[in-house]
Each structure stands twice: as structure tokens, then as C-alpha cells.
Image (spheres, one colour):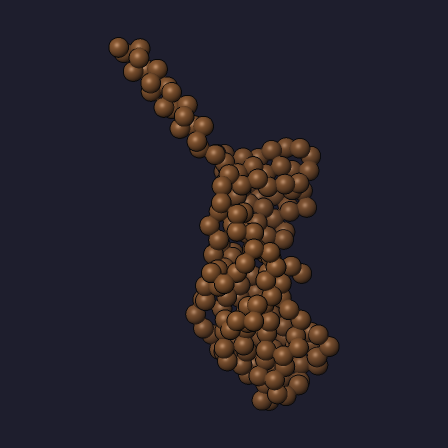
Length: 190
């Protein structure tokens, strides 16, 4: 009877180990690292392994295989914009007439797999215009900015602009956000 209980416990343990899966990162030299991929950005991949956290340069990574669908959360926030900024995601307003500060806005439900276009529209009633937004993907924050807001420096000179235009500037280059929901990933395409 004790032997039958031991065998049953062993079967349960093996079954539990078999169900427990880890993400796998394969370096270009063939070395495999297993653990939980906690972040992926244009410069690095961070993996939490049994031995601790490992940070790999993105250029050394050949592939990443996720054990299952990862949760995805993408948020945007206005920090400071001259005089006001609108942000649309594939034509739908996300931020409207923001100038200073603001709350994090969860845009995850509005994102589709593949490329998503963030478009900016500046409303400038005085000299220099600039903006600074933050994009947070699964807790990792990236700054989206052009120029120095509030006239403390230079205006935004992207897309052939001088940074001193007055009125509504709505022909700025799109910011492309590529989304892979199954991998729990969203990254800015630059």
C-alpha cells in the first residue's frame, strides 16, 4: 500500500513538473536560457532564471519561445506638451488637448496584433512647440519626445518642421507600435 502511494505521488510530481513550462531564449551561439522573460526591448532581453536575473543584449538573441500567452498592458501618458497635444491610435482619440501632466491611459484594448499607428496633432498658439509623452509596456517605460517643452530649449524639428509653427500641426510622422499579443509584446518600430 505504501509503495502504491509513493508511485501515485511520483506520478503526480512528474505530471506537475511536466505542466510547469518556462520561456526559452536561444542565443545566436546556440546557448539556451530557460526562465521567465520579464522584458524585451530594442536593446535587451531580461530573463528571470532559477539562478537569478540574466540580461542579454538583443543583438545576441536568435529567438524567444514563450511558454504561453503573456499578459499585455500598454499605457500612454502626456508629460508636457506645448501648447496642447492630441494623440490618436488608428484614428481613435486617446489623448485630447493635453498640455501638462495627465494620468496613465490604458490603450491595450484598442490595440490590434501587428502594426498600430500613433498620430500626434499639436495645437500651438505661441512660438516654440515640443512634446514629451511616456509609453509604458508591461511596466517598461519609453519616452516619446521631440524638442524641449515650455520654451526651455529648442522646438520639435521632426518631419521638416522648424518647431516654431503656429496653429495646428497635424502632419507629424506616425509612431508605429508593433503588437504581438501571444508573446505579450508591444514595441516601437523606429
